[in-house]
Amino acid sequence: MIRRRLAAALTLLALAPLPAVAYEVKDDAGVSTRFDAPPARIVSLLPSLTETACALRACARLVAVDRYSNWPPEVAKLPQVGGGLDPQVEAIVALKPDLVLMATSSRAAVRLRALGLKVVQLEPRTGADMRRVVASLGRALQVGGADALLRNIDEGVQAAAAALPAPLRGTRVYFEVTPTPHAAGRGSFIGELMDALGLVNIVGPELGPFPHISPELVVRAAPDLIMASRASLQDMARRPGWPALKALREGRTCAFDGAERDILVRPGPRMPEAARLVARCVTERMGKQ
Image 1 (cartoon, one colour):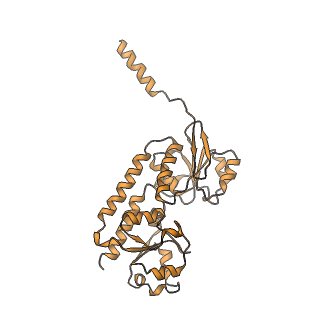
Image 2 (cartoon, helix red, strand yellow):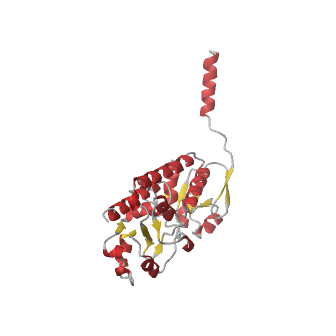
Image 3 (cartoon, one colour):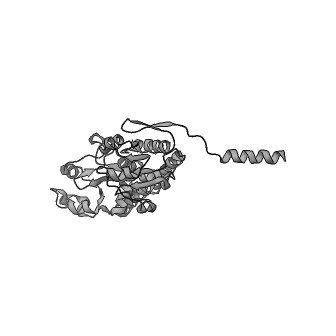
């Protein structure tokens, strides 16, 4: 009888909610935000943060997202409250979130904080940034799994690298992010992903993670392979000197559709899939050379 009572008491103790413990999170803007309890109503205004929050099993806490957040599929049913740079402030306030996630490049954080909302600004641009953001988001949400998620990302990228045929390593690649043109430099998470696959990025680290480049730079570098969105590739033939690029003349290009581009330009849980997309591009375009 005593043992049964003791077991019942221990069970009730295990099921009882733990007392809330206050904690602070310092974001990429250098701002520390205090939480008295884990946030239960979250607005995410950056797709990579949306994806990471869901990968950390906090999708059910999202009450709204930006117009570009479209993965995982369950976020499609959530209200959209503008973009990261032009959020619908009144709509966000009306949702009464206890946390707003957004990029450091957004100036709206000042206004949202002035209205009494807790804002955490995180913006991964490099591989190291991505790792820090995953850890910071895990702390902000008070969830476990950040270390496991990072291990899964690393293992997935390593598997894609191992599957790439050795003769194709060293392929010189130009990766265009926007038709402006902005490129992915070696210091970006995309550039680091190419490094992990054994590829050579023609845009050096001295230009920054995502530099606006001169079209002449690509002409001089003459990459073996060009990766870009379909819109970018359609524009390339009109650029001075680009029709002479051997990669364009011989069709050594990969045109990514919208869904594929989303995977490639969002640092976070789908980076193994991004690595597989890049490896497949290299294999299909360069494997017959």
